[in-house]
Image 1 (cartoon, rainbow, N blue to C red):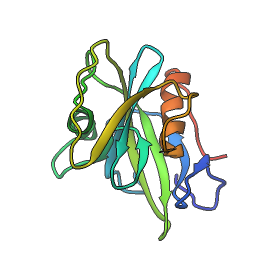
Image 2 (cartoon, helix red, strand yellow):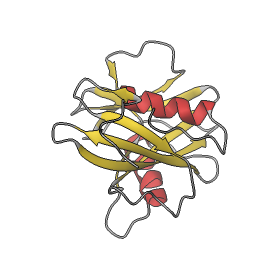
Image 3 (cartoon, rainbow, N blue to C red):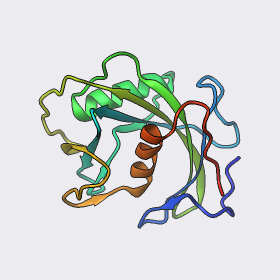
Image 4 (cartoon, helix red, strand yellow):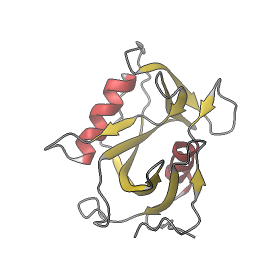
Length: 169
């Protein structure tokens, strides 16, 4: 359950908060808030793919809106390809649902999180939305700001095995 009164796991500079992370069955999302987005943590060896969003001016995980009639899994794969030109080796692995409370109106929603690996790094062409991509080890400094909510979620896909559960404190 999303609860904006619980201390968040992480908050960004705009007041958006990750308040929980629920592992479970992909086909049974939490029903206490909408699920409008899907994100992907794509790994190459020990580095995760980050995209630099031109509008928000920060490094983020690839992802975005789930279109009408589209599954979160399909949205994740589509957004990954559109934003970065990268594709995983094999199917994406469902990781869980990140629960967010978004500023300024304290709107609650979930995003489905998927993870994958690739051994084939493809060339990247900047587009209207994404200026650059980087493979990040989660420790080194990236030029510019990193979205802390996405960095936290990326760590979950690296550090947590199946069956773990992260929920609000």
